[in-house]
Amino acid sequence: MLPEGALPSTGRMLQFTLPSGHEMRLFATKEIVGTDVGSLNPEPWPDGLKGANTHWLDHVLLMCPLDPENGINTVADNTALLTEVLDFYLTEQIVAGPDGSIQIGAFVSCSTTPHDIAFVGGPEAGLHHVSFFLDSWHDILKAGDIMAKNKVQIDVSPTRHGVTRGETIYFFDPSGNRNETFAGLGYQAGPDRPVTTWTDDEIGRAVFYHTGVLVESFIGVYT
Image 1 (cartoon, rainbow, N blue to C red):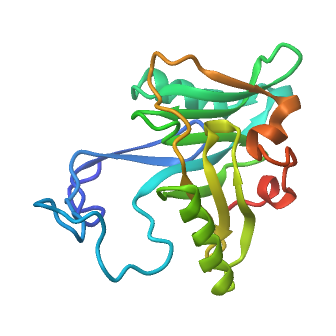
Image 2: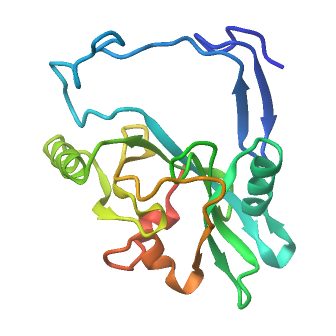
């Protein structure tokens, strides 16, 4: 247990470690920041916006140790913990093996979005990306223009995912972490919606629906 104020503007927290090794914190309360337009008779957007104008943090994708030959699959272990203990539910998954018995990617939600947290298997634990929500495909293209104008290192130019059906662009911030702007909720998620499953022979299309080809840096670089 961590006391109130251990993180700024945050109440008491429960700290624990996922099977993948990632440190997690559940907080009881959080200071309300609000929005520039307020909550009384608000305008649709504030004046003076700069940059890509992201709305909120959408999701995070964590890389998780995966070594099926030695019985290690922390993608499945993390998913079990979140769904069985913390009331998340599985929306989509990527499976491998002749019978699809190895879960190599899992997308879980505790809301109505296609994913709040995602887990993908890799050689070691790490952060793959943090994602920020935009309204539309047009906003994704505009974000790409802004990044190009400012010489931001783009990892994957605007495209669509098969998984979640989201519209996306990936880029690296100055610290070397990958970020994403994400738009176009592909569907309204819910615990009673059947889980969408992608097989490893279609993993290229699952990740990058238009080309069906994985970008080498996208699968090999994370922090």
